[in-house]
Image (tube, rainbow, N blue to C red; front, side, top):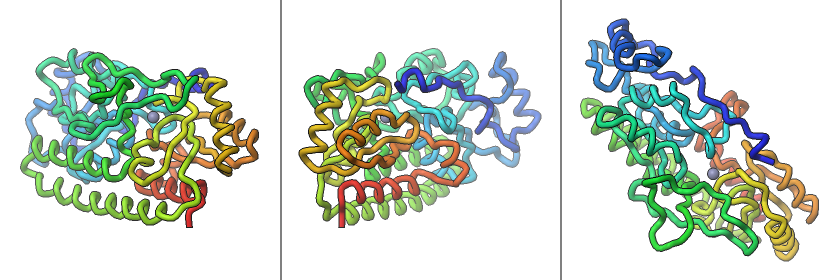
Length: 346
Ligand SMILES: [Zn+2]
């Protein structure tokens, strides 16, 4: 279902690097450095900073990293999100224009852990020149993904060449660390340190931007701990297996229809197992997600007389969410409310 319905759209000229500060002189430099691209790229990393220093050009591989970089960098950075709103990022691939954007950026942030299988080849092609690269799972305690039940195949994305598997386990690493506010804070710190290193003149601004956002993430963590402290259930059914870090942090178990990526039909055995589980535990809610069709979740819910709710993996905003000014923190707070409903918390 999802595979045929999902579009493999290329990012087009929105959220462009560059911005008003791109002077004529810089534009000329870009034309030389990024010859052949359509001129939408920002100043090359090697371009000299003219007076009235342009913002640092940052490219992020998908929404959460884009948001974290914006929060840390404030108006000192121009951040480009490669994956446009409404696009599910698991199988997204960069166009030549996206590659040119990355090449000409000052900082390129990607998640790692196998989430962007295209990245190793692209970085190899960049060679020695190119942006400062931030791997936003570096040093984080990655958990190996394992199929939850017999009869479930590994539908997850494979770690690309050079991507490390989580240590001591057979499955690929689970990349969904941003859904745990505590690990999201670690990612904010990685981004803060990289921006401060690339642009030391404004390190204080990056530290203060990061600090303000880290405080919001700490509040979010507290809200989850309080909100999920006293619940009737400890199990949820989700669409793809994105919420293990969140569940590990706050003490609930995740039973996913699909693997690490929402790219395959669940097996009949998996469907039957989840229907059985929902009946046994008396689960009254089944989660689906915003960028994937809810057909299977609805089928299970119908089968057991449950209600479907959205639990948002925040892998990208929908156009409606973007238009409504939603962001990582507001969507995580909505996730908390949905979990409180599904887990029947007091
Ligand atoms: Zn995912």
